[in-house]
Image 1 (cartoon, rainbow, N blue to C red):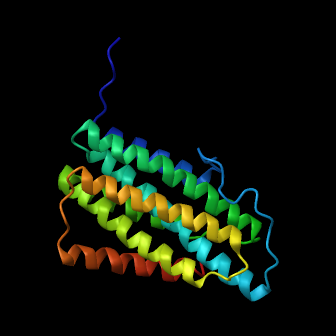
Image 2 (image 1 turned 90 degrees about the horizontal axis):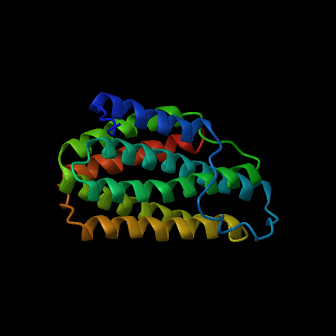
Length: 213
């Protein structure tokens, strides 16, 4: 029996289902949590609240990243681009698991708006992929550049005592920078500034709301 061929609608539904699983299920990471062997720090209530807010934002950011990449995978025109996206998704799943675990350790919760973050980002990913592989790669590069800047800001603002969160975010930043470099090396087109501005504005909305909800 030959390999089954899926329509674009089938692929959209498959990738949506995969993404919803990442929101609703407690998925394990492929790699060990880099902070697994670090003792839980003694944090004041104010420090715990600050760390929880930042880790909740970063968990939602990983929900968005997975959604974007799943959407782009549906529209990928070449196996090479599909594989770049699929590999990035694996590492984003690690990040999702690590941030979820850290939120649990901090006795906090994930964003109540994660379903919205996911569906919005998934359809943005579809549009990015629809523009063509090189624009899709450029979208990855710009996304990861902005995410890396965001993570650097959180690393500067984390309570000094929260070494566990710091180690997790440092590894995440390293991975995100690698994703961006891979996309650029594969021939991604630089995005026009209006699109970069739109992406930054969307990220600002998410990071602001996810702190609290």
